[in-house]
Length: 267
Ligand SMILES: NC(=O)C1=CN([C@@H]2O[C@H](COP(=O)(O)OP(=O)(O)OC[C@H]3O[C@@H](n4cnc5c(N)ncnc54)[C@H](O)[C@@H]3O)[C@@H](O)[C@H]2O)C=CC1
Ligand SMILES: O=C(O)[C@@H]1CCC=N1
Image (cartoon, rainbow, N blue to C red; front, side, top):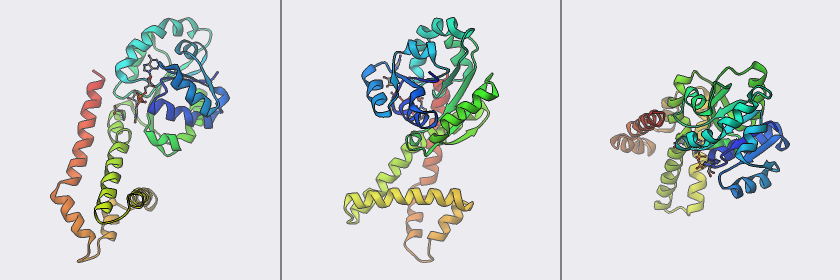
């Protein structure tokens, strides 16, 4: 079995979904503390389900999808399993844990195994994720194989490890704040008289289309904003109000608060 997942929650489950597309479900093995959760996802994706020990024993890429605070206890149990196979059947650890460095994961796993550290986000579930990654001691063929398996997850960007925490605070956490914005935009529409379902559709499609404009036009977001604001029109009144309420400063501070907390998780 090539790809194994330990922890199939919101993020591990979304990545497993992508890898089933990229590598084929027949090459994927899922494990979770509550086995029924892994079983339900395995049934849906058409892949296999097993135990942490099985993933650690037989998979070539071992995705670690548990919370950072649970990583040490989880790996403590698996360290002897990893050690006993390392010589005969090498493997790559793949961590997605916020705040934990490759060095820390290796210490917890018991040795300096080849490792990929990635920072995905939940839109990975739809193939629309943003994933930063870095690695150490991984063979070029192994990396290529991993990149192929991960391709259906979304945009992959290699970065030095010292940028992962900052990236996590933008694209790892960012979906939560975008959902808050969509909810608020829809609430405004409902307040102005739109039915809820229409308000939500209009808000979400607006965020999707605006994001595509930024990515595909290459224009600065400020210039794109200016193109919406007619002189003496309605939009600039909303811009004025959001500036009064320190909208952009609040978002920037949210990123920095998340960045500081991410660094704390690694201590
Ligand atoms: N949720 C997100 O948007 C993102 C999460 N991450 C990272 O992904 C990792 C997982 O986070 P989530 O999926 O959000 O958490 P989650 O709580 O949804 O999923 C964690 C899963 O691990 C299972 N688990 C816990 N201990 C276990 C053990 N000893 N053995 C096997 N399974 C075990 C839990 O039952 C649960 O299903 C974390 O390290 C987090 O930092 C990274 C980027 C984004
Ligand atoms: O909130 C968290 O800790 C995780 C890391 C990035 C997104 N969610």
